[in-house]
Length: 465
Ligand SMILES: [Ca+2]
Image 1 (cartoon, helix red, strand yellow):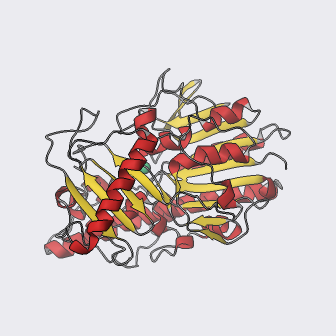
Image 2: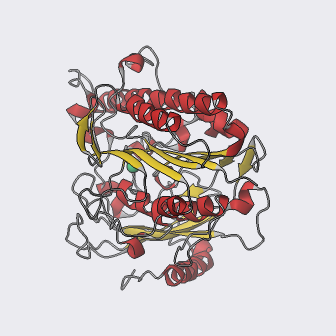
Image 3: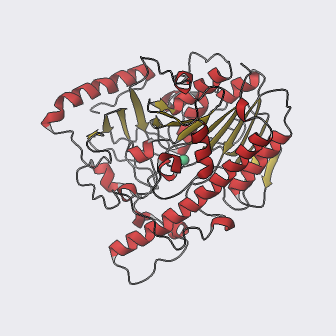
């Protein structure tokens, strides 16, 4: 088989439940759905640490954050680490990245393994953004999502047609502060977007971490809302008003991503490359879209833990396929390498899921995943440090509640707390059953699985946690 091209499109904070291929109740994404219709939708793709920088490092290196050293937003990635683009470049692929990097800047952290790159400084700007490039800083007029796509298509036009390519299109959108472009500025204007089931969550049956997190609608600031709160509203009315402001801008920003993904798919069609190209759409992690009354991510709860993952490769994947097996962000690099016919380095901790793409899940495929969020009491959202394990049926979370000297984590430490959710009877994770006698054996079993996964990936349990 000819070596396929790779177009890896990763947005920032795009939750699956704002993609119509995933059954969104609040928007339509026709171009993202083209990838799903022509390929495979993954229903159990999870990140191993639900924030930007760590998830990106896990994707690139195929290793967990305690191994690659990128544990928080303040731990830039060492650019001498082995990454999948670097190995593809060495194997003769043309490689490029445009858009969000967020793994640090300067000689030790700039992108490596790319023939060409232009990346936003840190989070970057939506309008008239500046970019770091090998030749220095440039400012480009326009809207970030359009510009990142323009750069990508220009690079594709100028590539050597005789060699395969691996292109990373890393959108800044739909990250906070959700600034739409002019084309979508008034989309949804006259609509009422329904509030999610758990919008009025009171956090009663949860660990302390849920109640103290500062990511409720009332924590949105004026830059997020973009206009002052109207006078005369009750508190409940204000919370609902804030949700409408937030979610409409979020969906407007997503609509621009969808349009721009359409441009890339059209380009592949026009170039006759659709059959030879692996197209991936994902996001560095999920997001709370008013779920549990929140915006943002970080928690191991479903909306934040889940990554959308759509993959199209007509030579291998049946159109309209759905996969319920578990795949993780650390599995991406080994998968892309295997697709390119490159040996996966033994130090990579993820597992290639090419067998799943072929519709042939191996009998010993992973049935549990390990998660860890390190940035205790982070300055912006006050989410507490935790780790845990998720199986298809249950989720066990240990809030170990200790900053452990991690950059960007804060104290003080507080005693550990545990949560257990039965995802079958409680898919929205509203009832912590850790102390219910009926789940005693489940807790024992899952604590053992947690220990096994920590041992397997080389992480250290916390005393008392
Ligand atoms: Ca992100």
